[in-house]
Length: 275
Image (tube, rainbow, N blue to C red; front, side, top):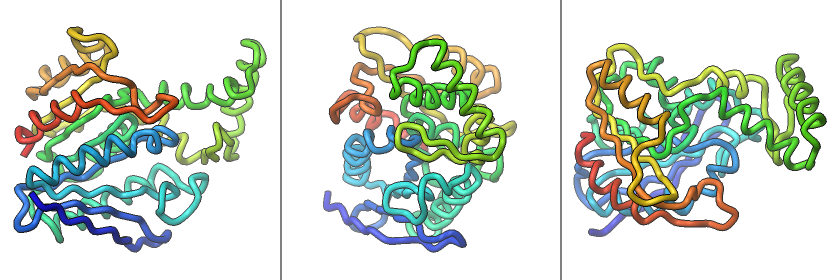
């Protein structure tokens, strides 16, 4: 199938947001909006996300990627972005996709910490029937923030006692309204607060289809304990989540760019169930 690709910018009150739309020639079967991961994980994941978006478009989907404020080719510096800015960016991209591609609600496709942003966005909108496709979601924002902050001590190769002191200093700076530089990224207090408070807890009243795909290094294993617990909570809430485990590398954090072909194949399988 022939794929059309269109790069453009959307205007906001805080500058422009770079977007890339892939779509088939003719009417698409549905739309997909990608919600990217956090900081360097976004850069490490670009190749896999691009491959998946191409496959989706070749199967008839209109797929929109957006660089959030301070990321990629969008306006602003990473250190200027706050959590609320990214929520606003999702609202803008979601509205554009419904107005210009497919009127029906798009499937919301998140990767890693993008799932935290997505869940928070769902609680602030009326998109309670949108299909969700989550790749290796980060389920706890506080834990993810802590891991990110630890990169500062790790990069400086500090001893445990010194690392603990640095962590305390970093958290104190953020609490005092001061940005901190972590692994080349200036983290604003507003972004840190939003990330720390977020969790992949779907809002009350959500009734859309959900698929979660987890990557494991070993073949033939089941979901991780955290994903299993999360899945059971969705069942208890009356949902029927699709949980899949595939073998592949943690491409969002590997030193070299790596691919996970089984993840792409599994995505092909479940995407049609999310309309």
